[in-house]
Length: 187
Length: 196
Image (cartoon, rainbow over all chains, first blue to last red; front, side, top):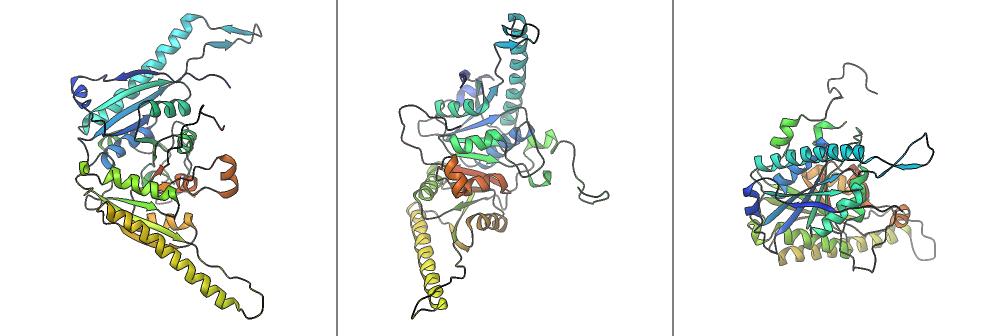
């Protein structure tokens, strides 16, 4: 099995001083980790979680927005030579940059949602395979609850569950909340 | 699939527009209360799920959980027809006895659930519904317009799931509302073993 790096690249406030105030989290506080990706579904899940779960316990809760960045491959197979060639560092950097831009966009959108609902949130970015990365991050962050959308980027218009949410429902160490899209939108 | 001219047109484009997502306009709340349906069988997993829910949603920090309405649903197995042979017994009697036993068992289970709730000073609606767990829960969610369905999980591995089926799996896929699966934390073993 290939190694998957699931390192938490950055943990901590990326948005401004008001987030730092939120980190007076008591040890007994309720930590909610919401995994977001590019999909509408996950941003809706964040919104829903704030409305329904954090609803009555603003002071006690700590919200963490987690994004898993695409893993940058270090080797590419070039068809010409027939054997693996290490990708030139320039193209790797470009790809990595593109992924980071994407991450920033996703995170800032999530943070905007939090701000508009007057919730302070920490952000975290992990890299690697989404399933494992989210599981590990939730453990490292000592999450009390993990929130995910039900379908991610591979949206299928049926009563279907995305592979990541399915995996997390079985393998996460903490309770998992799977947020379904609003009724009007499917079928 | 659907013919043209259907009044409930299929939305082929994005499922919901961005603005509304961010304003959270899809949040449904009846009188401001968030309805949680908790599935309860007699297992330790259910007890754990119930305790976890009560601890986290009804703690003093939440003001005693005023914004939440908890509905506990227990699925009682319906007695199908039984074929009984043997002297001195008749199918109806056996069926009646079995039915009585089931009812007593269900009542006891429900009492336990109520006891846990009272211990946390929480008033919850407790219901017994007859039938297979999956169908019962789908009905309960529809009936109470649940916002969240809370389930414990037996934590079966993939082989066990293939044989015995998984209610939490089924509900995670098919429920109309958000599903929260509360698992008991396993004791930490030496290395984390990946089943897939």
